[in-house]
Amino acid sequence: MGTSSRDHYDVVIIGAGMVGSALACALARAPECRDKRLLLVEASALRSDAPPAQPGYDTRSTVLSAGSVECFQHLGLWDEELARSAPIHDIHISDQGRLGSVRLNAREEGVEALGYVVENSVLGARLNRALQHPGLTLRAPARVTALQPMPGGMRVLIDDLHSGLEAQTGETQAAEAPSAVSASLVVMAEGGRSGLCPALGIHHEKRDYGQSAVIANLGFAQPHQGVAFERFTPKGPLALLPLSPLGNEQRAALIWTHARNDAEAIMALDDATFLARIQQDFGMRLGRFLKLGKRACFPLSLQLASEQIRPHLVLLGNVAHSLHPVAGQGFNLALRDSMLLADNILASLRQGMAPGSITRLQAYQHAAALDQQLTVAFSDYMTRLFSSDATLLSWLRKAGMASVDLLPPLKSGLSRQAMGMAHARVLPGAS
Image (cartoon, rainbow, N blue to C red):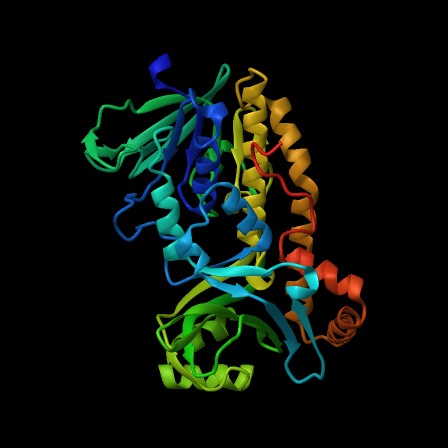
């Protein structure tokens, strides 16, 4: 079945998670896209007036680096609700059973905060509201079942998952859209478990760390004062990220990494024993842990796509690269990629070119490559260094922490990596 010009879109984005939504917002607000057709396809229902059903918006939190906050401000997404998120003024890094620590400080870097910890439910609701834009067509819940190359673009086969589709106004309409559309550019931002990659012959190199992250929100007595803690233990890293308080209750988001079998045992503990184990590994810097929210457990790996671009096709976010959370780099890297891609698309449109030519996409990949390579290497290095109790790695860990704290340039470099400012940043349309 062919597609008519009525069924053609300049850009089709698959996946309305945080990365796909940020890209959609960047394009929809741009003057270059005023007369262009943008389609966002998402398997979950999207409503701006209800708690989001997107699976990524659960009990987890996301660390937005200072660079990512700058992107959100540029896109008009950083509203009063997001601004009430907990700022990270300091990052305290320590190694259990060893003297010494590293403390990264926002004031030393000349910024208000190194980043902010935003609960995914809040971030997801803000993005869902921003997607209600007249320049953007939403098709949700719907699933892309196949991508087929065609002259000048891609043919996109779509199955609606109910009898109606939600338009950009948020109203449910009769399903009149065809089951096939064409696109000058398709952006796959559907997450790390893409169902489309195998059919396209796109493979993933996977490094399984043999670990799982146990996550939960904790309540405690002592104010966290905007300090994020990263504590390395022989069993794996333990991170506590400051959250905004609930009334008088102090809160933090826990990311507790264990070998997979140990993580399963940790998940089986009753709440009192679970809190006691955290207290034993973390210590009393925040006083006594008093409350425990809903727990979840996720396997951890490094996953890299064998290719990120083809003519008229780009992989973005976890489907392109999925990182260990030890350094908090995954979403912030994906957001930088999405802003680079948005800028690339807008530059093509300003030049009167349809987005998606392989030459233009190669320019995007070249611009993103160094940041991706260094961030992936940094995350993988931190994971292996701080998850091993081998003698040599243990010595390097101790020596490395001492060097960072004693040498200001090393400390500043680590801070700028954490802030997402170690590399040149692009804000789409800001020239």
